[in-house]
Image (cartoon, rainbow, N blue to C red):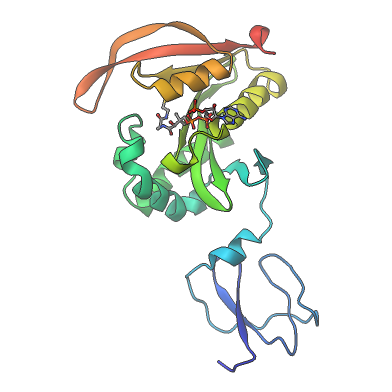
Length: 238
Ligand SMILES: CC(C)(COP(=O)(O)OP(=O)(O)OC[C@H]1O[C@@H](n2cnc3c(N)ncnc32)[C@H](O)[C@@H]1OP(=O)(O)O)[C@@H](O)C(=O)NCCC(=O)NCCS
């Protein structure tokens, strides 16, 4: 490469394209023009994304939780990022979330995300990520979203470092608002093991009511687990 040439990243593919500052160019992923406004010349694809440039790219369908945190759909094409995230925080998630055990690589992450893409296409369950400063740090999902009965169930997770800032409460409140106010759902459920104090605290912050405990309802981590049911009704929502 000549000295006056620079690599730029295509945010859709992570491929690096060649550009000469002397001629200028257009970032073909983001459409950001360079000073001279000429079209980019493709040189050779490199499958390694450049994080700083990816963050500068336009994202679709995001909801800002704070100045630095965003809630966005988490889709099958992000399987590699999701698998790396789960790997990074597995010990933190594994006591509470079954999928933290079976998402072990990009293929298993893609299968998991594809199932949500499929249910979403039928107006069922959906999954979202929480990005902080462009880094995946958590998420939220509608494990169940059953429009005919008006009942949905949410789940949430965060990296240890992203805890304590209200991110999941903000995300879950936004999703519950959407379900109850926009989609006309009647009931948002929260199922949690009694030992999970932080998750129960989120349910309380959302204004959910404790309804009871399903005793030893599922086998997980070598024991049969109880599950508390918390819920928010459309008629109770602020
Ligand atoms: C459950 C889990 C997502 C909760 O995370 P969390 O950080 O406690 O929850 P929030 O993001 O809502 O943050 C709440 C904290 O931020 C504080 N906070 C700051 N600003 C806030 C705001 N605007 N709104 C609400 N809380 C705010 C709260 O006081 C609270 O602090 P505390 O922990 O000192 O009481 C997290 O512990 C986790 O990922 N656990 C592992 C996976 C898991 O258990 N998932 C749930 C399975 S049912």
